[in-house]
Image (cartoon, rainbow, N blue to C red; front, top):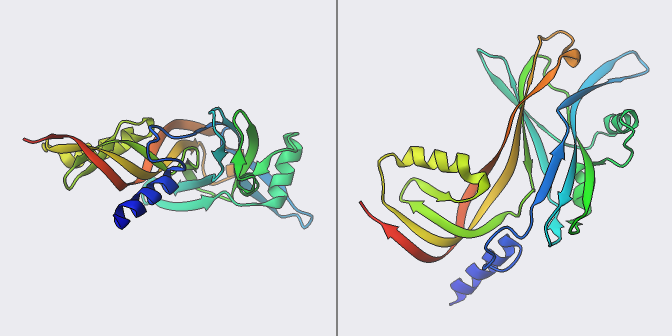
Length: 247
């Protein structure tokens, strides 16, 4: 009995509400600019180029939304011998002030300032800026991941495949489900259960730079697609079995 109560308490804490929640209690709508560059010039004649994105978050749900935003850019360098570098959106005062001034947008908040607000009321919105810093001069592709647009756990029906993982009917789970189905192969045995699933729902954006290593700050950056994905998906509390199918 003690274990059951502890499991229920964990499920409620992760879902941000009661375990009976049939869908995320909130989700934040995201509008964003293209990935852009800005060159900072200093009095000593030196200069540095940073890459950034501006965005707007809106809470279109009926409930207040928790703010736990996180953005990172995974940058690919080289086409034959590929290297990858990760850049987190962190406060960069000089760059932020310059971009606000040039863009005539003094109200842009960095990610940390947005999270310090803690909650976003129903119908409210906030405009932000994410500065990822300086990329390698030969970078080719930048993939940006945005976390915190949905709650960290979901109460839903899950299809479990022994040894291969689980699939979920949810907009962010297409790629996850495809990865599981690849592992499943010819296995048709599964069990459907009601469960609490902990995950990281992310909005993924990919950008490509056209050019070489010379004057990279002048090269055009192109959008190369945008999609949802679910990472680190784990069943943390299984409520009951709904359906089973065997070979």
